[in-house]
Length: 257
Image (tube, rainbow, N blue to C red):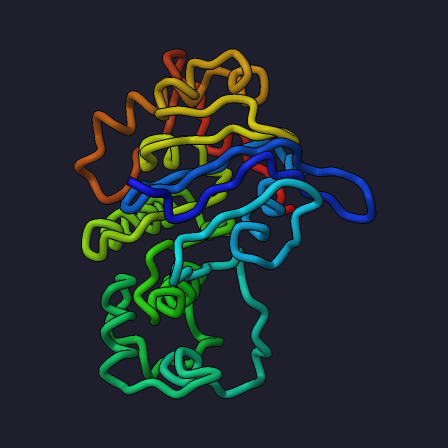
C-alpha cells in the first residue's frame, strides 16, 4: 500500500541553520502517527514542511496525487471585538451551507454551536471548531500541531478521543505533534520521537521503552501508558501516575515552538 505522505532524507532550516536533518517519514491511510520531542526539537517545522508551508533545505516530500489535507493549528487569534458566529467562521473564505456547517460541527463533537459567537467559546470548544473547519473538505490526512495547547488534562484526553472517533468514522490518517505524552502514547499507532532528527520510532510501547526516549522524557510515561490503556474505555484519561504514585500528567510539557 502506498503512503499518503512520505519524506526522504528531509532536512529543514531557517537562514542556513538546520533544525531537522535526514528525516524519513511515511503516513499510511487510516493510521495515527504522533511526533513528540522537547521544545526546539523541530516538530512544528516538520509539520509545516508536510503541509507545504516550509520549503525543505534538502531531501524530498512526496504526497499522494490529489491528497486532501486538513490542518488544525495550535490556536488562531481572532479579534474579540469582531462579531463572528461559528457558522460564519466556518464559511470563510468561501460560503458553506448551514447543513454542511452543522455536519462538520457534529463530526468534531460540538453539534449545535453554529449560532454561538467565536469569542464566547471555551478553549475546548474553540479547538473543536478549528477541527470542524479542517474537516470541511473531507481530508485524507488530518494534520494537527499541538492542538491541545492550553487545555487541561481531561479536555486534552477528550479532544484526542474525538480525533480517534473522526479517524474511525472517516478513515482519514492523522499526523500530529503533541506534548501530552501520557495521552498521545496511548492514542497513536506509531510514535516518532525527534530532537533535530528521529531519535526513535515505532509503536508506543517500543518508543516508551527506548533509551533515547527515556533520556528525553524519563520513565514516568511508561507507567502512565499502562494505566491509560487499562482505563481506555473511559472518555477521559485518568490522572497519570507512575509506579511510585508520582504525577506525570504534564511530564515533558513544553512551550510551543
